[in-house]
Each structure stands twice: as structure tokens, then as C-alpha cells.
Image (cartoon, helix red, strand yellow):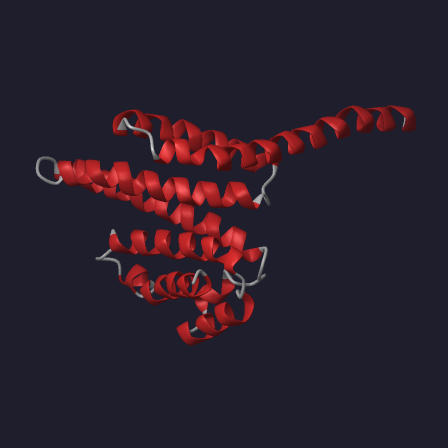
Length: 197
């Protein structure tokens, strides 16, 4: 019985670590290749490709949930897709179809919130408890950011967390609980700018 258990570990173990290695390596390749998507000459083609790229990255994130490159690329990708494509469709729909406009606003808001949460998962790796600080008074949150985020390399995660959160709030103007969080989103972006100087 012990031999069978050890044999199964030998078979499963290397496969799992190989999957993790592949996912980590692919994350780095995606990051290097991202400018090709950002600068593609055909807007519609890029928009059609974006969801499959995001789903691939989500798949890799399941294998390596702590991979910071994946967390940031997904946060950036969801934010860009929601802003660049879904909100565009929403604006067009606003002139013709109120129900579709509301549906698209809901989709964009969900993507922005997913982006915010992914960025916060990245920030947690530098400062455990930063997500919980969102429930504390704003001055406490600002002090926490100033104390725990001091390096320029941390600016990107702060920016995407704040920008995505602010974008979700912008689509939730009739939701007082979302509006109340605006100061937190602003604090993240402002602190990101300080670090990025």
C-alpha cells in the first residue's frame, strides 16, 4: 500500500510542478507580448481576441494563483476590455436600447471589480491585510498604504486596483455604498503616482 502511495506521488508530483513551471513561464511570455495587443492596428480584431486571452490567463492563474504577473496582466486586461470595448458598446446602446445599456454597464462593472480584486491579491503579497483595510476609515487606509508601499515596483498594482475600482464606482452612481468607496480608489491611484515619480 505504501509503495502505491509513493508511486502515485512520483507520477502526480512532477506533473504538478511541470504545470506550475509552464504557467509561470507563459505568464512572463504574455507580459512581454502584451504591447502587440495594445498597439494592434485593427480595433475590432483586438476586441474580439481579448476575451479568449483573458480566459487563458484565468486558466493559468488557477494553476499558479499567487503569480503576480498573471494577477497584474489580468487586472490590466479586464480594465482595458471593459473600458475600451464594453463601455463603447454601452454608449452606442444608450441611444437605442436602455435594457442593453444596463446589461453592458453591469458587465463592465463586474469586470472592473474582478480587476480590482485581482490587483488586491497582488497587493496582499506586499502587505497582508491591505484588503481588510478597505473596511477601515479612509485616513487609516491612507496611512497603511504609505507605511507598506514604498517601492516604485509596487506602483502598478496600486494603480490597477484604484483605477479599476474607480471605474466600477463611475458605473454605480446610484449605489451609495459604491460611491462611499471613491476616496479609497483615489488614494490608491494617488499613492501609485507618488511611487512612480
